[in-house]
Image (cartoon, rainbow, N blue to C red; front, side, top):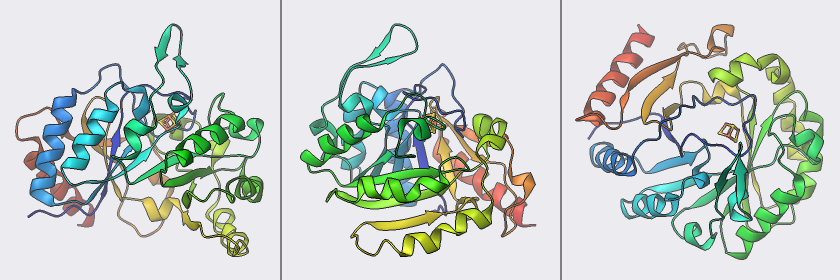
Length: 296
Ligand code: SF4
């Protein structure tokens, strides 16, 4: 059995409800086929035994057959983290002009996934909108309430950047009352990908500032929520990504044990496409070669 030392992060498609200027994703206008995705992930499980995948943005719940995809991944034995903005759980959502994503019932997804990650980047609409366009505090609260009612395990995902670092305590005060929130992940903004690299100056936060959160967070000892600080260095070379078109890639990053300015770029190493014949074998071989080349 082959090993993968990276966490597999899948894009749910090429749509997004909030189109963050600092997004790391590569969007296209062609979506992978559901059958290709399921076939690829079945083979990947068989050959590597990886236990977990994360289904993330482009927005998974903008894809009409996502409940079907999640049910099938669960049957394959995956532990599934679903990261979603979640707006389509509370209403029909307009994307761009004339495109409507119909409301999805929370019941159709909660039983297939192990934990659902919801973004919460500020205690006011103004602060949230520095990163997520047009998302509102009261919408996030409604999503958390809807998912709590349905018994979902929840995780809050906060991208920490220079415009919200002073608001972290206020975010905690908004989430601490929810029994279903099991985890709070605070991610240091990562200046990679087309949006993340282009807009890095708007968001970038020094390691020192990010690490200073540790002291503040240890004072939140009146909570059962597991709090995790995830620096950009923690996440360097840790992901294998599949975009909304099915392209499998890793960010262009060096192998040093510290964050360097050259790690900030919008380059990616392409390893293949899930629709190709024998994609899993060829992608795993390329990944091994890439990692060997980086260490020599
Ligand atoms: S970071 Fe996530 S929510 Fe923001 S645009 Fe990218 S996919 Fe959408």
